[in-house]
Image (tube, rainbow, N blue to C red; front, side, top):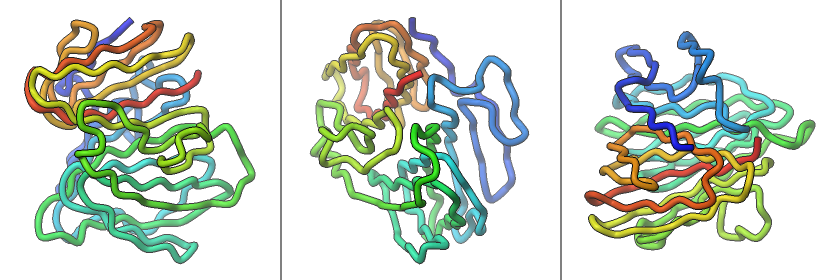
Amino acid sequence: MIERRPFSSLGGADHGWLKAKHHFSFSNYHDGRRMGWGALRVWNDDTIASQTGFPPHPHADMEIITYVREGAITHRDSLGNEGRTEAGDVQVMSAGTGITHSEYNLEPGATRIFQIWIIPDEHGQPPTWGAKPFPAGERSGRFVALASGFKEDTDALPLRTNARVLGATLKAGETTRYPLEKNRYAYLVPAKGSVEINGIKLDARDGAAILNEPSLEVKALEDAELVLVDTAQ
């Protein structure tokens, strides 16, 4: 089962400094049919204006993954962590028992991110934050784990949940495959470009909710950049 969710069908909000689209119910947007997908709870497509951002605010008991598509985001938190994550790179905040953080676009132009929240398997753990570059060339033609709760994904940022966040870049005409185990929930969004996934076309920033597919065959119709979440129920 693959359900295409066109970008135009997503909920969202325009706050001036922030233009947000929500693949799942979030904040003032509520759709009872889109409350999450397996343990995946939030997938926000955010455009943040220059010299603006999210002031300090708290989180707890959530794995929060930020994939930077354009520009850069500057993070500060109550643990004393501070870092700038730029396009193509990823940061993970395991909110654990509680953390306060801010996220600002201090760049001269707009910053565009995917922010993904996954429900953790572990509770009562201390909060952590980390970031890592993932050069596009290293995920050319294949999916690479960017963040993962699986010990074998040694190059990925760690997650406290039975899930992977993966990235791939494909040239027009290229095809890649990704196997899915039984009862896994997958959600795929092209950050750029259009693709076919098991024969179903997705345009840039469309979502695909996937269940009971033994494998995914993704063909790029044009140069494409992909983000995929593979999670348990």
